[in-house]
Image (tube, rainbow, N blue to C red; front, side, top):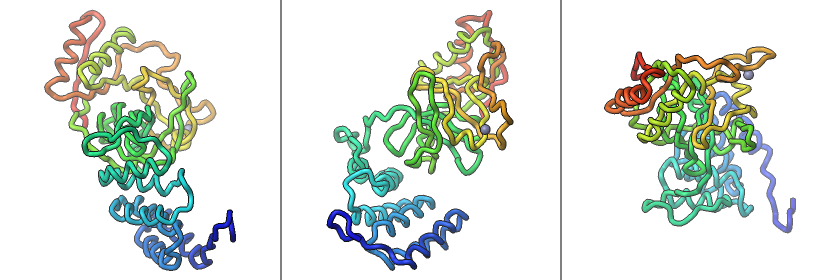
Length: 328
Ligand SMILES: [Zn+2]
């Protein structure tokens, strides 16, 4: 067929068959068998960008980044569109996983994004100013949606304090997929994408603690969160910031509160089923203030007790803490 004077070759029926079968196998987690089929498809139609795009996708699913980069580069070399190609986005993800910063920059630019300046000395793209987003940690396991700051199109720094069950930490940097899987809308208007984590990109050295607070008022609770933030770490009142959502709701458009711009609540922890017509409990909404709060703190061991004691010392009549425990 001809499109704008360009000859476009249609892939053969056997290419389609092998490719369709491969994606069924991928759905069943049978990556090796799928890989054999997609390799055969690429042998059949090596000039077809999709052949290499599909292989790059498979290698992404397997977190085999060297191979994902190699196949992705073959895919983009055969592209006939100027920008906006998902092929380039996947090259960007693979390059970011490998810390191949020159290629990551090239990929984002080729996709059509503006990458300011030369970045850091390593060439790492910085200053892209993509704002906040949510990321679903461990999407295949005990999933938890947390908030964070986008470092670049493929990485988010986690700014919520993940629950102990997640085994994850505040301050981690997560490599995530390009297509959002869910959305959080705020009353103020802005909406934020929810991305699925692909893998942990950089661990965090800061441990997570759980503590029981007696905080007479919300302002007392806020004071602890502020003290922790001022020290360069974080405290988060899990009693109000966490809600349970079923998978379907978590992956849809859900209302969310906008916090101080850096810290958006609530984050979502997965639960098995949708709880009937009334829907999910909205964290802390419309209920009376309960002084006892279960609070997460992300801070070094040398600092956490001093932080809590300082918080109490500022208003001993309205504040208390107990049962501090390191959980992650
Ligand atoms: Zn639900």
